[in-house]
Structure formats: structure tokens, C-alpha cells
Amino acid sequence: MNYENIYIEEENNIATITINRPKKLNALNKRTIAELHTAFKELDDDGETKVIIITGSGEKAFVAGADISEFAHFSVKEGRQLAAEGQNNLFDFVENLSTPVIAAINGFALGGGLELAMSSHFRIASDNAKMGLPEVSLGVIPGYGGTQRLPQLIGKGRAMEMIMTAGMIDANKALDYGLVNYVVSQEELLPLCLKIASRISNNSSVAIKYAINAVNAGFKYDVNGYASEIDAFGTCFGTEDFKEGTTAFLEKRKADFPGS
Ligand code: COA
Image (cartoon, rainbow, N blue to C red; front, side, top):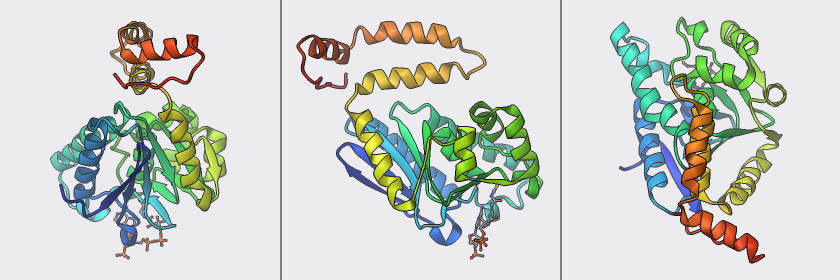
């Protein structure tokens, strides 16, 4: 696929996907969602990429939401389809990806932008970032998982207030709420993400895949998280990474994980 609205940079097994529609504050139109799906899938499948960082181009926005101009005239059926396809192809897809995804929130993360950041495995923000779910100010509700993931991350009462007021919180409030893990200056944002990504990439990518799965299992209504953990824990004992990790520890050397 030829990318028009995103670009990818890769170094030391860490890929950075940048959403690149700065004139539209990186708003997510259909094409961008399709490109992101393909990019996440290809990086997850390539056997090389150990961590993915997702960010927005420019200094103003991570993503200012779904592209309002694309859905303003949608019918009920089209609205439902928009949410279902978006959740399936991007938001749930990212959350359940085997490769860790870090959102580098470099400015406005609104609506679908905050939902994309919340689908990522964790978030780091620059100090100019502003986050919110403004959908009710447009007469609609969050449709890319925001009503589910925001309460999971910051608690029901705070999420209700943010959704009902359609207001924005700044980076420090987001840190206080636990919505982001760190707040740094814009210049420090990608270097910090890369530093953490590098630490992650030294560990077993197979074990990380099972850990993501087990953590996510606890947030699914039809899955028992503890049972999923037991199953995944056992599965790890059959992997080459487990053999290498335990052998390296006993031999007092650094593990060199084969990733299988
Ligand atoms: N969808 C489509 N276009 C968007 C957009 C979105 N979600 N967010 C911003 N844009 C476009 C604007 O229409 C404008 O385009 P134009 O120059 O062709 O008119 C451009 O991006 C710049 O935005 P602008 O509003 O001029 O910037 P600002 O600094 O005055 O305000 C925001 C920034 C983020 C506060 C404002 O753009 C905004 O409220 N965006 C919508 C946020 C939203 O409701 N998202 C949820 C969607 S479900």
C-alpha cells in the first residue's frame, strides 16, 4: 500500500508511525485508518519490529479526532458501520496487537485521537498536550471505544465528567489521572519513547505478546483474565525464549532472545 497520510521510520527494531495530515490536525479520515491498519499489521508481522511508537506530525496535534467532514451527513446505518469498522480495523486491532504500541501524544488528542492513544498499550505526553472526548458537543458519542477505555483508565466518575462536559484536560491533569505515564517537553517526547521502547526490545517479544494478551483478557466481559494468565504462563514454558532467558540467567549472561 502506498501511504499518503502516514510515514514510518524504523531503527534498531523500533518503528515510529507518524500520522501526517498536519493541516487537518492529523484528523483520522477513512484512508488514514486504512493506512494505519496496514502499517500496524505489516510491522506486527515482519518479525523484526519489537516496539511501535505512534505519533502525529507537527507541533500542534497528535490527532484532533475522526474527520468530521467525512461523516457529517451519514445515516444511522452508516454511523454504526463507521464505528464498527473503525473499532475492528484500528482501535481493537491496536489494543490486541502482539507488538507493544506506545502513543507519543504531542498535542491535541481529541475524540478518535484520544481513542487511538487509549488503544495503545501506554501513553506519554508532551507538556502542551490536551486530551478530551468532545463528541457530545457534536451531538454524537465516542464511537471508537472511548466510552469503554476512558473509564478503564481513569475511573468511571472522571470519565463521565470528561465525556459529558466535552472538555479538555491538560497533560498534567492526564498524568494525575493515570491517563499518561509521563509528561515531558516536546523535544524530549520521542527520545523518552525511544528509550523506553529500547528497554522493552531487550526482553522476550514472545513473553510480551502473552503478557499483552493476559492483561487485555481481564478487561473482556467474556474471558476469565486469571485463567488466561495461567494458560499463557504455561505456554511460555514451551518457547525458545523461555529456554534462552532462564539459561542466560543461570549462566550469568545477558539473554539473546530468538523471538520464538
Ligand atoms: N475533523 C476534520 N477537520 C478537522 C478536525 C476534525 N476532527 N479537527 C481539526 N480539523 C481541521 C479544521 O477544520 C481546520 O481545517 P481548515 O483549515 O481547512 O479550516 C484545521 O484542521 C485546523 O483546525 P482549527 O480548528 O482551525 O485549529 P484551532 O487551533 O483553531 O482549533 C481544535 C484546534 C482542535 C480545538 C479544533 O480544530 C477542534 O475543535 N477540532 C475538532 C475536535 C473534535 O471535535 N474532535 C472529535 C471529532 S469526533
